[in-house]
Amino acid sequence: MSFNLDLVIKSFPLLLAGALITIKITLISVTIGIFIGLFVGIARIVNIRAVKLFAAVYVDFIRGTPLLVQIFIIYFAMPIVLGIKIDPLIAAITACSINSGAYVAEIFRAGIQAVDEGQMEAGRSLGLTWPQTMRYIIIPQAFKSVIPPLGNEFIALLKDSSLVSVIGFEELTRRGQLIIARTYGSLEIWLSVAFLYLIMTVTISRLVAYLERRFDTKYDRR
Amino acid sequence: MIDVKNLRKSFGSAEVLKGIDLSIEKSQVVVIIGPSGSGKSTLLRCMNYLEVPTQGQILINGTDLQKADINKVRSEIGMVFQRFNLFPHMTVLQNILLAPMKVRNIDRKTAEQDALVLLERVGLENKADAYPTQLSGGQQQRVAIARALAMRPKVMLFDEPTSALDPEMVGEVLDVMRNLAKEGMTMVIVTHEMGFAREVGTRLLFVDDGKIIEQGEPRVVFETPKEERTRLFLSKVL
Image (tube, rainbow over all chains, first blue to last red; front, side, top):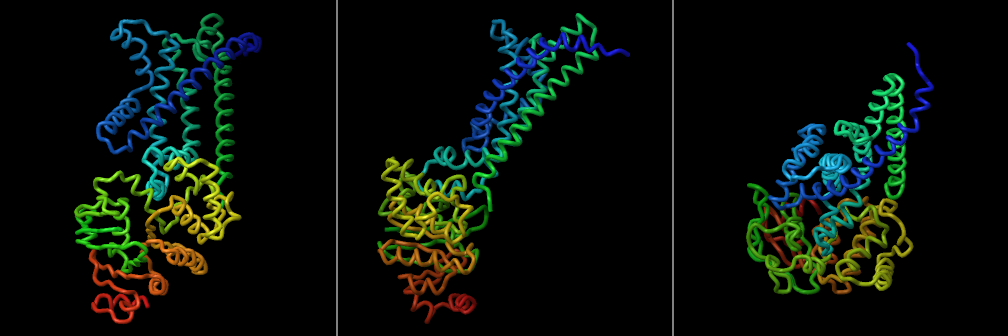
């Protein structure tokens, strides 16, 4: 067995560029996912049956089907319905956002329900409306408890984004495959790819731990 | 000021309030006592529709809560909870400012001036920038009272305001309530503090099993209860 260090060094700029693309689609998707998740999470607890049902169906469908299949549906099946070709970048971000939105919705729902019921009562008893109480009282408190699971979701999505390589979108994993096709350096390249994913995920988890600490000291001392 | 007509409330199959009729006048201090599970807290919570009655009517100044803009009605009824329910992510000052600014659209400067006056009234002017968890239970409850007063309510509802407090802090909260009563605030208080009920209350209601069993001037009810159930309850708590 020989390990070609030279290949690693030579491919590194290409892989790093791929990693940056991975970060880009993950960041965009997580951001959109948080917006979707916030609304769907609230929709799941609101007292309107149709809204609740719609949110539940969405969450069940996304969580009950593989992300890979969702990517195929968006990239291969949707164009048949819409009659237009979808750009791989758009397909990748759409699939990842919609997927992440469902998981984030569950995180927010749990976070909101974990806030003491007395908080909603106190807000409403002062004359605040339900949306005002949600916005100023419940959600700010829920945010604190959702930071750790949200961090996990971020990391999971970053890794799962490797699946969009199957539609030819050139993120980190796809770059690796392409380099291997030219150089046959499976060992060197896959280890490099894994290393880059690891650097990214460890950085995120440190960042999340830091955020968690900052939010904690603000008002939780007893 | 508050009229309760044939109020009934059920949770599932359990009927907690079994037909309550009650009329509360301005500046009355109505104290509600009774065993736990008697429905006294539910009765209080129906008065601002935190619990929606199963049957019957609640009228505040003649407005039926069923048909009223509930947020507007609530903004004029202060409520103080057993467990304070301060907003833990906001400072004391922010807790007090929120509703006047968001519900009444009062500008920050005016709202702050009002808030500081209220904090002085409850003896906590130096705690404006503290977070609730940095305060003792008694201090938190006094902030909760100031927060409710910031909306300049016409009525104040108190749901066992001293039950979650350490004994040495009960007095400071009762003092604040006593002063409010002196200033002529209309108050409805669910409490286990019999001494306070007797001293400050202008009217006492004894509630048991979802009904008002007996009512009258506190001194009279305490000294010469007419009903057997009242007598039995008082003999246990006095």
